[in-house]
Picture 1 (cartoon, rainbow, N blue to C red):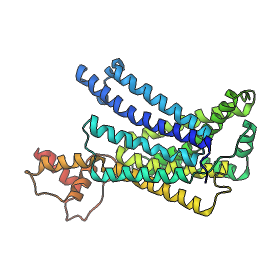
Picture 2 (cartoon, one colour; picture 1 turned 60 degrees about the horizontal axis):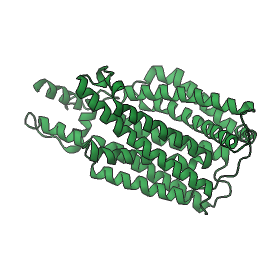
Picture 3 (tube, rainbow, N blue to C red; picture 1 turned 135 degrees about the horizontal axis):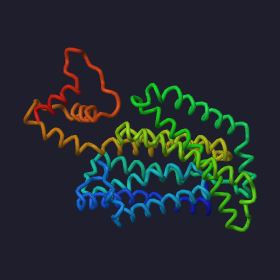
Picture 4 (cartoon, one colour; picture 1 turned 45 degrees about the vertical axis):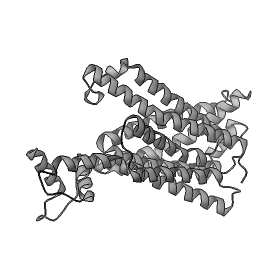
Amino acid sequence: MAFGGENIKGFVLALMSSGFIGASFIIKKKGLRRAAAASGVRAGVGGFSYLLEPLWWLGMITMIVGEVANFVAYAFAPAVLVTPLGALSIIVSAVLAHFILHERLHQLGILGCIMCIAGSVVIVIHAPLESPITSVQEIWGMATQPAFLLYVGSVIVLVFILVFHFAPRCGNTNVLVFTGICSLMGSLSVMSVKALGTSLKLTFEGKNQLLYPETWFFMLVVAICVIIQMNYLNKALDTFNTAVVSPIYYVMFTSLTIIASVIMFKDWDGQSGANIISEICGLVVVLAGTILLHTTKDFERSSSFRGSYSSLSPPLSPLSSTLSTRLCSGNGDLMRHDDNVPRPEEICFRRQEMY
C-alpha cells in the first residue's frame, strides 16, 4: 500500500516523540543523580533538591516536547501506526542507559530491541491510509456510531467493576486490576486526543473548529481520562515492580487502543486481509520485544545478588535466583510451595539475617 504524505508526517512525529521521551528518562536520571550527590538526599526518600537541578528540568522539557510530538502525530496518522511506535522510546532509553548510565543491556535485551524495530518496520510498511476528515462534527459522527458506543459502554462498565469491586479486594495483589483500569481509560483518551488533535489541525488550517461544542467535549474527555489513567498508573507503579507493570500496561494499552481505533475510525476498512494480518504480526513482534526488553532489565542486578551471597549459602540456579530476587522485592504475590521445601521468601529472609 502507498505510504501517504499524512502517514509520513505522523510517522516522523512518532519517531521524534519516541526519541525525545526515551532521552528524557536518561537526562532526568542524570539530573537526579547529580542532585542526590550534591544534597545527600535522594528523591526516592523524599528529597526535592532535583528541582534546583537544571539537568532535571532539561529532561522534563525534553519529555514535554516528546509528548507534544506524539499528540500531533495522532492528528496525521492512524493510531494503528502511531501507538506501536511508542515502543521505540523504550529502545532509546535502554541504549542510552547502556552507554551513558552504564546500565548493562543484556543480550536478550538487545534481541528485544531488534524485535521492536523489526515489528515497527512491518507495521509502518502495512499501515492503512486514513480517510480525510473535514470537521469535528464528522469525528463526532464516528464517536456516536453504535459499534463505538458499545465499546465505550463496555469500557465504562469494566472500569466501574474494577474500581469498585476488584480494586478494594485484590488491587494490591493482582497487577491486572490497576493496569486494566489504566489501559481501558487510555484507549478512550487516545481516541479523544486524536479527535482533539484533528480539530486543532483543522483550526490551524483556517477551518475554525473551536466554535463547535464537540471540540470542547473531546477536550473534557481527554482531561478526565488522563487524570484517571495517571492516578491508577501511579498506584500500579507504587504497588508492583516496574519491570512487571510496564510491559503488561504497554501490551494492554496498545491492544485496546488499536481495537478502539479500528472501531471508531475504521482503520482497516478497504485494507486487504494480507495487510491486516501483517500489521497484527508486526504488533505481536513489537509487544514480544517490549516484554523481553523489560524482563531482562534486572538480570544484572540478579547476578550481583547471587554474587553477594554466594559464599554464605549453596548457589542457586540462575532461574531460581532471579525468581527469588523478585519475590523478595515485596511487590506482588509470593509463590506457594510444599511445606517441606524452603520457600524462596524464606531463603531471602535467611540470607538477609546472615548478612
